[in-house]
Amino acid sequence: MAALPLSALQQREQKHGHTALIPRTAVQLRKEHDRIVGRAKFFLYATVVLAFAGLIAVVAMPFSPIPADFSFGAQEVVAVAVFAACLFLLHERAELMLRLYNFEPVEQTTQGEMRALLHRVPEGASYQSALAAENRTFVTVEVEEIRRRADAFKPAPEGQQTEEA
Picture 1 (spheres, rainbow, N blue to C red):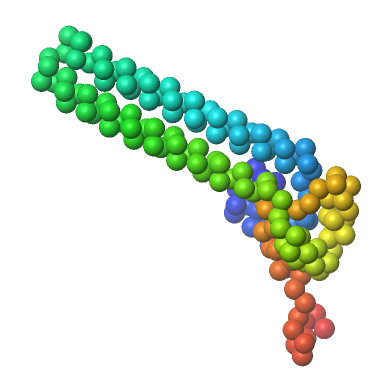
Picture 2: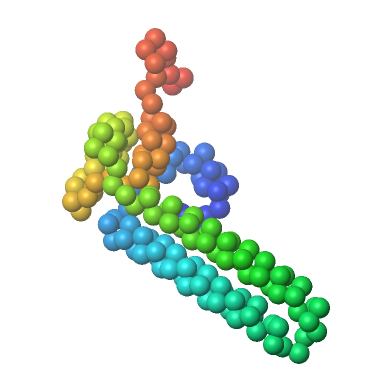
């Protein structure tokens, strides 16, 4: 379902109600974590290689057959372009590193809140038993999914009747 576009997911939710809340396994979480770390390493290595290539290009330019007047301007252009590209790659790497916080275990108080919210959801007991079977706690990425699913099953305030009654 993650491959579906957002509009298709929203239409599916409207047609069939909310999708079931299924916990990711520890193996799935580990694979996604490792994939993000691998991409972050790639961006770091690409930044270092690009910086060295730019440095070599800037240093070698005065010794090239390019005219001296043009060489100085070209050095500046190459240096600025390499600097901007390195900043972009480091920014992308930082964004990936921030996504790693999604795999951190939540605090004890938040775990209690998540358990309370799961009591309102039909599949909440199976969700908790799946986590217990893997002997793991909730991770940050699951918090919003659980809150969104629990909001769909909020009880009606006292004194108000549901439309079905």
